Image (cartoon, rainbow, N blue to C red; front, side, top):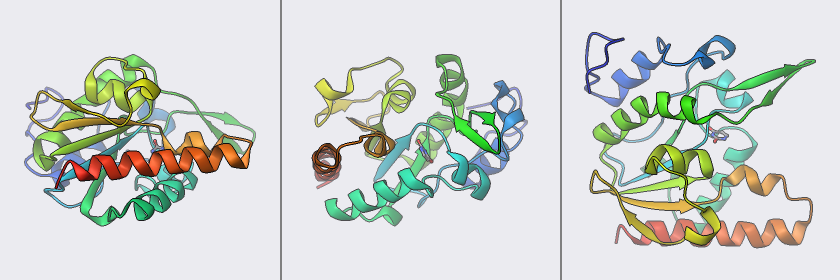
Length: 204
Ligand code: URA
């Protein structure tokens, strides 16, 4: 896709990662340390899409390396999915946050920011050509499907996407971290693992 902000159309995921650092398509870059590109093999069969980098991801420049990443890693392992074989990315590539004392609090990206950043996700999809795209949480659903879809009613089944990949919906791993009761967290974890297994089974 030719971008009026960039002379060259990205020809590789590495090009996307480089071009992202100059992205000014929305205002989020101004409060982030860096843009966080997706990570994974060039032609990963499965793409996992989260919402946006968190504090740790913003500092390290890699997706899902903080607390939500730890939940994702455990769930992938339990589902028998090798993270290194998947392409892991986010709907929005800069950390949207609000300073509060020494901390930076996560703020949910709005529809305009998700739409602006779809530019990059579409490039990642075009270049990685995954067969299955798993949207984790509402922001990822908006980015991948271009419309809101209720997650709990639609999780666990495959949708045909325009680019011939199969789309799959599940919860965001950070939602498990916010559950106060351990029994709820465990049940939610098992359901998340079931979804990841079902998405992975589409590749068989
Ligand atoms: N949450 C996300 O959605 N993505 C990350 O990379 C980290 C936390």
